[in-house]
Length: 145
Image 1 (tube, rainbow, N blue to C red):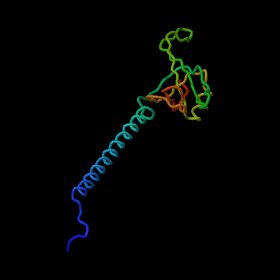
Image 2 (image 1 turned 30 degrees about the vertical axis):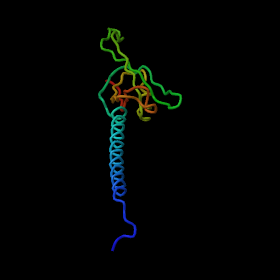
Image 3 (image 1 turned 120 degrees about the horizontal axis):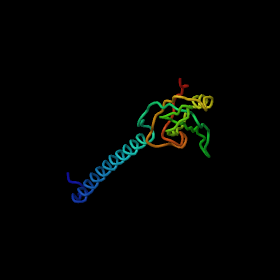
Image 4 (image 1 turned 120 degrees about the vertical axis):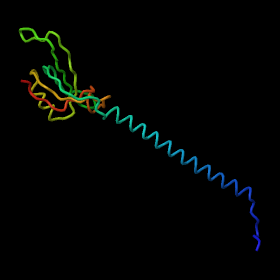
């Protein structure tokens, strides 16, 4: 039995081709979007959370304070001396500026200000406003012998 309304094969073929093109375009759009999200996520991880280096620094804890307009962070400064005179005065010195994210470590550093200390730090690639002003984040401290 013949159809009452014969179909136009060119119109049906055009609709089928158009839906295939839309499906492919949608697929490529989502693949591209996932790739962009992956790249941005990787960059954020590498910039702010990846530990570039870590180690220890020993020196005189010269300055330690809590500062900031919006985010209050703990910031410190140590004098690292490589050569000392006979009166225990640093002749060739370098400053080590650091931030502290842990409140307990900050309390320890406040008590040790003006003394020789050894700190363990991690270095990040970039800073976050709530973590501190520097890329060096101190995670522990002990009094130097």
